[in-house]
Length: 212
Image (cartoon, rainbow, N blue to C red; front, side):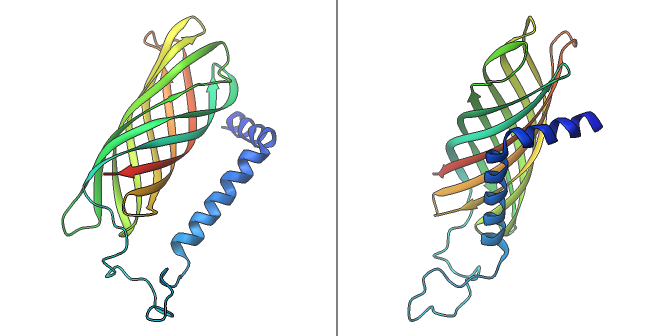
C-alpha cells in the first residue's frame, strides 16, 4: 500500500497539468450539479424561478442506445514498475430506465488505444464489456457503479496480453436530450493466462456521448 501511494504521489508530481485539469473539471461539475441554480431560460416569465423536475422541457435519461468517444489518463503498476499514459477510443451501449423509479441499468463496451508508457512491452489496444447500475440524482444526472471484464491485446514481457476483472464508478449528466458528458473511474486487476504476469491499472476517463 505504501509503495502504491508513493508511486501515485510521484505520478502526480510528474503530471501536474493533468492533475490540475482533473481537479478543475471535478470542482466545476460538483458546483454545476449541486449548487442551487436558477432556471437556465432566464426570460421575463422565468426570472427568479428554480428549475424543478416537473420541467418537461429539461433533458432526462430515457431507455435507449448510445455511442460516443472517450479519453482517459491511465496509471499502470506492472511487474513492479509504474507508468502513466493517455488513451483515446470509443464506447457504446444500452440503458434501461425502470418505469416509475430513479434506477437505470445498462450494458456497454469500449475500445481504446494506444497504451504508451507500459513497461517491458507494447499494447495495440484494449477493450472491455461492462454492466452498470445507477441512481438518478435528478432526471438529467446519473451516478453509477460498474463491473465487467477487460482484455488487453499486445506483447507484455513475452506474453501475448492480459485480461481481468474491472470495477469502477462514474457520473453522467445530460447537456441536451441527446448529448451527455460522463466522468468515470475504473480499476483493472489484470493477469496473463498462465497466471505469471499481473498488473493493476487505474483509469480516469471523460466521455462525450450521443443518446439515440
